[in-house]
Image (cartoon, rainbow, N blue to C red; front, side):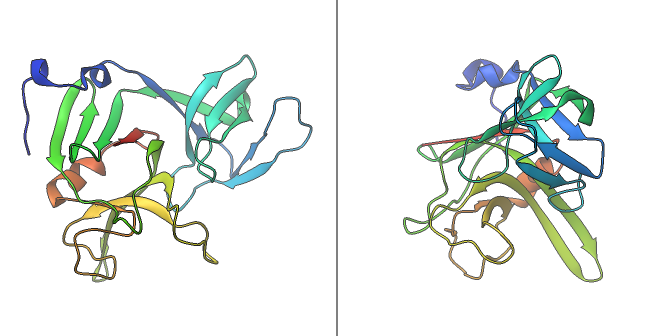
Length: 212
């Protein structure tokens, strides 16, 4: 893990950016395409998508409404939730993945937590570019089961949906397997065990910017 001085960092703006996230406070969260709609377009479970809180990244706050980034296709879908159905918190965390330079940065509270190389998707199954966020953290070691990954709101652009839903992109460790011994993946992002240990401590709703 490299920790260069802050003066040498090209992503210094990430050190001061503040982001808002919303957490659902009921067992389901009604999400509306527009504020004027009389019925919700989506009903999201809480907890979700797995055992963690239903957390969405906030894009804008109106008097009685909160605009959120939806964890669905197509990428970049925004929608609205009622202000009284969620709680709002702020954080200063961000992950930047640069496919061109091959470097992954993680920022938290103004500090560069890690900067390291990574492996991503192949030419056949590339890792998508865009602005996403962390919406799933699995860190389970029990009953001989070791599941540790950090899921984001990106989806494969080349793999068809299954009965379980759209194929989502996640961070996982080199030692994990995607069904192949190749270091390139079908869109997911391989990192070191040390970086994954850092990532599982990042809050849900942390923006993940993938450029390249």
